[in-house]
Image 1 (cartoon, rainbow, N blue to C red):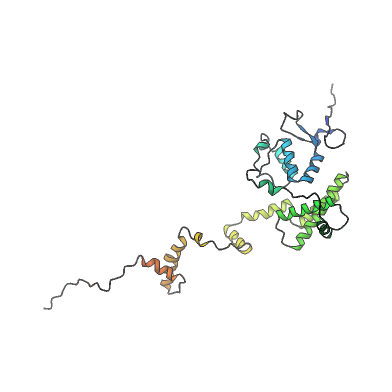
Image 2 (spheres, rainbow, N blue to C red):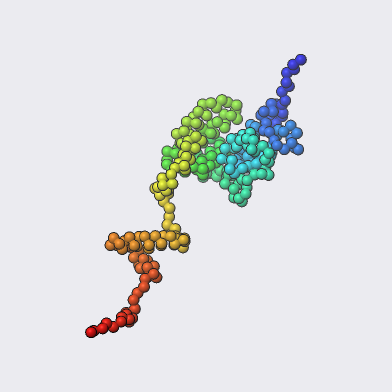
Length: 294
């Protein structure tokens, strides 16, 4: 006799929702505390905590599910990271203690979002002027945080890109508010993707931009010289192995002398060559045998 499999449900300890299916809860590798291998906070509540506290909330969640925060894997997208670290086989046996994000003392500070709890009158006026009037103080704080986060992660060098990022942040706020009210966000997501495309910030576009690192060495040097000129090195470290002096003396110096060309390194050339030059003493006379005059 075939019996229908009973659906297992779980109650979130944070929100007033009725028991939900266990798929709405993250798996935890810590069976000592969670016998059903599920944390007692639903995914929706986890997302709200991360949205509110940024990296600190994400770090707390990773402790609960007992999975590591790996510097090489973490690219700034919290939810993509959780999916990867939970599904990829090479990370299944790792725990939070295997985290590599905190090997450097300041690594955590890089990813934390500085979110004030309130805005001063001046900050509120500036926020209203920048984002527009009619929003709540917490919404202005969220928008400011997201905007600064974009500026920290990308090189924003034009007014057009600044405006696109501002619109992206506003759409993110709309998505956040609509999801909190259980509304459909399909249109907002489309607008969000269109804005990312226009700003050249979609992941696929970033991957294409990264491919420039695979160019030839000569093209790479030309790009660096044109876009980010390399400053002159300190004289102490300019030619530590002496190869520059060697080329200026024994190649450029000899070539200039042979062709009769002016050499701006002539003094250096003369100084080095003098060490290998034999000069005849003016007081020295040749010992020449006398000839018979018969």
